[in-house]
Image (cartoon, rainbow, N blue to C red; front, side, top):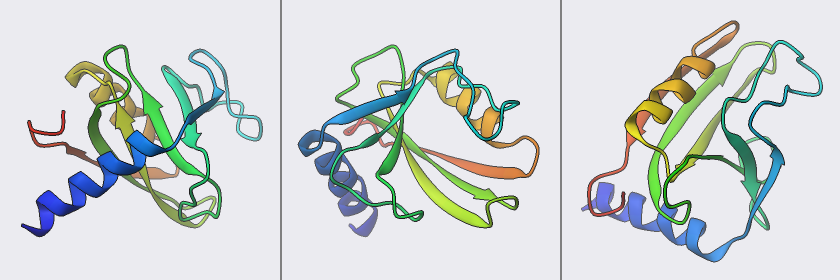
Length: 118
């Protein structure tokens, strides 16, 4: 039951907070120009993630109101760890996101949402 509660709670956050896209697909990170965003990326307005900013969200080509999974990241340059939501992502898009976060000083783990969430 705890795992089901985890996914339902994340889905509730996605359903009740607006997504702000501040890094559209094709853009680069303002401080790390080698970091390229292959998909739209933003955050949930009115939330707080591990870095004190809004909870990060990757947006895929599907239904962006549906939780697809999460990526747990660790970054040795920023000395932080975060949970990033994936919304409307296909399996291929989730693998692309995982590759992005498993490069350079970062490492990541992908947790796909169970079928009842996706």
